Length: 316
Image (tube, rainbow, N blue to C red; front, side, top):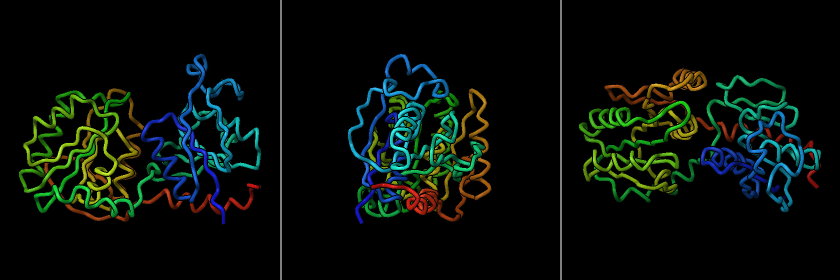
């Protein structure tokens, strides 16, 4: 059977790409990415009051496709435009709350902590993502030769957003906890930055930790995959539910490095409560424990449900 064609629409941010690509892979699509750019005036206007017109976005979408998977505010209007143009010849799926009528999409995928309700809403525990266990296995040896200790702790660091500001004193506190809890107890550290991690934090890590630790200066997908496979414990900063969700595919103990929020972080709190109830995460405090939980793979679960609906669409 010929693979269905997928069109992935995002603003180009890692977290968004991870989600749309993860679903496309799980659905077995032959996909392409399209980074959406809105025309100047429409960048400022919420989707709810933006017309569903071609002039809103700059992209010329020429490829043939069967399934549109979008994520992020800028991709909302292009997805709805394409659905109105092609009707049931395509399926359009939006990830996250689109802030418009949900009836504009065949499916909307949103985490439980968003409290989004609707007949076409598929709720997930945490964020769906692109990680596959097979990819972790394939990249094991990328970092394995560098490991000098029997135990490994991985620190995955995000960056400032509208909820967390990553002040220097907060980062230093996290670094001290890693040192005291893990490094002084025979662990080796792998420091993994994200696209949002400020250079000052990477530089601070290089100064704070000695030469035995592995500190990456740049985003390196193979290092990320390899580190998750090698880790005995994983620590993730609290700013990214996506990175915590990705780590949960390992089934390994995950500590969340918490920081005070600079504005109401209700959605984060609900996410943390859910993942604690599933025994996936604990707070990074002053002790180290080991525990097990069922590996979380919401991407495949959601994909299985959507695949059953393909038969209702005229993809010819």
